[in-house]
Amino acid sequence: MNNSKSRIKQLAYRIVQAEKIGMIKDCGLEGATGKKVLTILQHAIQLLDDDECYVEIGVYRGLSLISTSIVAPHITALGIDNFTQFDKNNSNKTIVENLIHQHQLQNTRLINMDFEDALNSLDKYLNGKKIGLFFIDGPHDYRSQLVCLLFAKRFFSDQAMIVIDNCNYNHVRQANQDFLIGNPEFKLLFEGYTKSHPANLKGEELKHAWDTWLDGVNVIVRDRENELQPMYPPTIRDRSLFFNDHRIHPMRNSILAWRAAKLAAVLKPFHPIMFLAYLMKLIIEVRKRKKTEIEPYPYINSLAKDLPYFNLNKLKIDS
Ligand SMILES: C[S@@+](CC[C@H](N)C(=O)[O-])C[C@H]1O[C@@H](n2cnc3c(N)ncnc32)[C@H](O)[C@@H]1O
Image 1 (cartoon, rainbow, N blue to C red):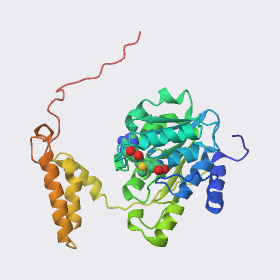
Image 2 (spheres, helix red, strand yellow):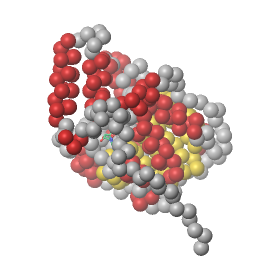
Image 3 (tube, protein in one colour):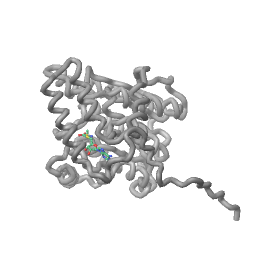
Image 4 (cartoon, rainbow, N blue to C red):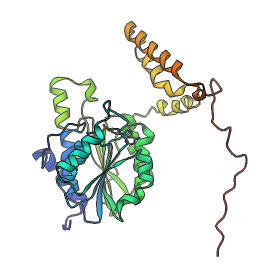
C-alpha cells in the first residue's frame, strides 16, 4: 500500500484508531485472542504490499487467522499449527479447514507442522514473498518465543510488523526484550497489558480482558529509518528462573519439573488436598515413564555420550 506517511506512522495511527473504533469485521469465531489484538491485526494486514504476506504461529480454531485474512483477500495468509494443544477431540484442524472453505478464502493456507520445522522451511510456502505481518501465538516458553523471532527474521520484509500475544507473561516480554536488544533495527511500537492472565480474572475484569488485549500484546516493527526511540517491554530484573533452567535440564525426569513446581505452589500457604492430588499426579507420571526415557544419572545428564570427540568443520575450497 502506497501512502506518503511511513508504514510505522500509519500503523501507530491505526492502533490508536483500533482503540477507538474496534474491529473492521467481527467473524464471531471461537478462539483465544483479545478483540483489540484482532483489531490491530486487521488494520495491520491492510498496510501490506502485494509482495508481503501474513504468517501466524498458533492457529487453534482459526479465530486470528480467519479474522485477519478475511479483511485482505489479496494477501497470502499462512497459519502454522501442529495441533498439539487444546484439541481433545482432534477436531481443530478440520474446524479451520472448514472455515477456510466456508469463507472461500483463496489466500489462506494452513501448515500443519511444528513451528520450528515450518519456519526452517518457510521459503517453500512463501513463493518469493516476505513476511510483512507476523503474529506469534504458539508455545509461550521463553525459547519458543525467542526462536519464533530469530528464525522468522530472515524472511521479514523491510517494513515488517510483528504482533506478539500473551505478553502479560514476564518470560514472553523477556524474549521480546532480548530480541530487541540484539536487533536494534527492530523497535517496540506498542505494548498493552491486562491485569493478569485471564484464568485469574472474573466478571468485569475478565470481560474487559476479552474485549481488549486478553493476556497482553507487544507490537514490534522493523525501523530501518530509525523513526522510533528505543523502547523495551518491562521485565523483572531477577532472572533466577532462567538460571534455574540450567539446573533442571540435566536432571533425571526433569521433563516433569513443572509437575514438581505445582507441589511447591501449594506448600505455602498449604493446601493439603491439592498437595496430595499433585503428588499423586507426579508419582503416576514418573512411574509411567519407560526405562528408555529415564536418563542414567540422578543430577547431571549432559546427553553428551554420543557426541564426537573431535569434529572440525571443512573449509570451503575456492574453485
Ligand atoms: C492459544 S492457541 C492460539 C490461539 C489462536 N491464535 C486464536 O486466535 O484463537 C495456541 C496454539 O499453538 C499451537 N502450538 C503449540 N505448540 C506448537 C508448536 N510447537 N508448533 C506449532 N503450533 C504449536 C497449539 O496447538 C494451539 O493451537
